[in-house]
Image 1 (cartoon, rainbow, N blue to C red):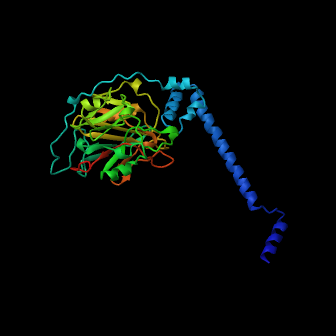
Image 2 (spheres, rainbow, N blue to C red):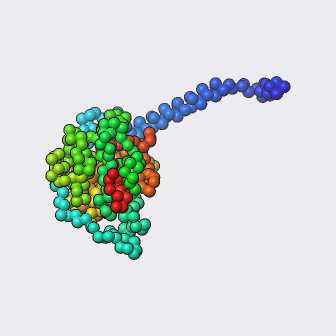
Image 3 (tube, rainbow, N blue to C red):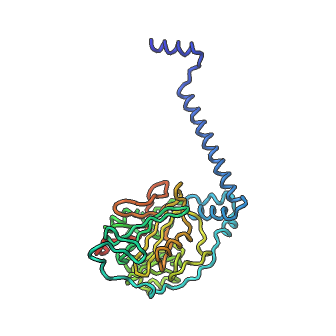
Length: 360
């Protein structure tokens, strides 16, 4: 009876009945047209950025996409390899060896009463030896972690699994029973689908050199047995002569012996960033910048250098960025991961051990 009434009603109204299949087909057509329109708009916007009247906008776009393995191909839609190489070309780096006399690690204990405030005006409110500061900027948001005792900062790595699958920052923190951590150096990542297990340069873990065959470039950062951070390496042999206990490669150098690197050496796009540095009192600076998000597009290398100098860095190095940029603190990631496929495994990280703890 109900079925008859419904049929009668449809006939009386003069409206033809629409099947579920027709509804799905129409929905699919609408979705396809929407996707096509979005693709056309995006292509047109990128075309205007690259072929438009502003070389600055073109260069920023090309550098931004070429700094990530996942979408680097976008630049090739509009430009030849030769044109891209010309845009990415930077001034040859002049490497200056780290002057260790510029750093004097503070060894005196923090005051028994009251919270410790450092020379730069930052206060350790919870007396854990770590100061966390929000870092806002015109195109980014981020965090600076100040670790007052540099001996607590070690390389997170598992030499036994190098070449296999890497670990996430959270997994490294758990492995080392640490309290904080950031991502470390670069790694082999063919077509953005690598397993994060193979560093792309030599690394030093607890005084031992691994992956020596990968070599070393000027983009290497190491902490020596006296807890002084070094940049400006020129050879693999220097890892031994400088008595490096922990280190990995990426780059570029941001600050060397109290001065920012030449601006021509810091040209880059806007992306998520991670960096490590050290102040004159020995405190280690760990920086992470969010990117590829509506409220935080990202930062340039020059932005990183400026931030590091503002926080008193004597030496500083850019680490791997993009979808690898993460900072873990007090049981969670405190910044937003830029990866659309989830947290990525990596071969190295920098860990902050608990006060008084030793690497296991």
